[in-house]
Image 1: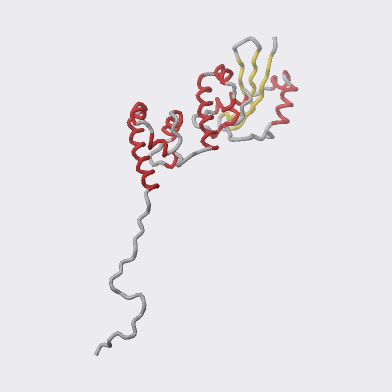
Image 2 (image 1 turned 135 degrees about the horizontal axis):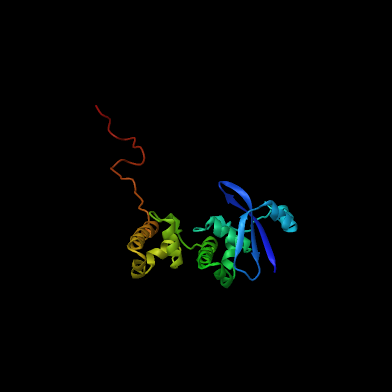
Length: 206
């Protein structure tokens, strides 16, 4: 019977605490709790290894905490799974994520969109649009709309299936694009018969 401990840190009652997760190979039951003295005695090598690396890991890429809809429990679950950044989540094996739960597959989709949006946003970001909430922005990006310009040109019937609010957002997007692309009017100064150069031969008043 193979017993596998995993030590990690998480917030508990407003403070960061060391936790342990103990799994037994071949069994679905998992023990998870704040670290107890008997855990240190039972798994001394794993505990020492954890203490050496605690607080020294450097995350390459965007932190999982920055991802919309990411809860603390899911973040810890992913880090124990070996995924420590949004970029790693975007590239993770979807079948293995599905074993963790369907919610992690959805998080991967959001991660993919986040990475894509960071590396290439053609046009104005949806975040710049008035009345655009975070939930609606994610809904649109999952729908394949990643910029204000794309929203302005999207199929209105398909947007209506998402909700009337998205149709209203499209109207705002259309006005925003129109305002950006319309040439600015240049107001020329009015000439009211005042000469550009002073004239010396004007008749003097008596």
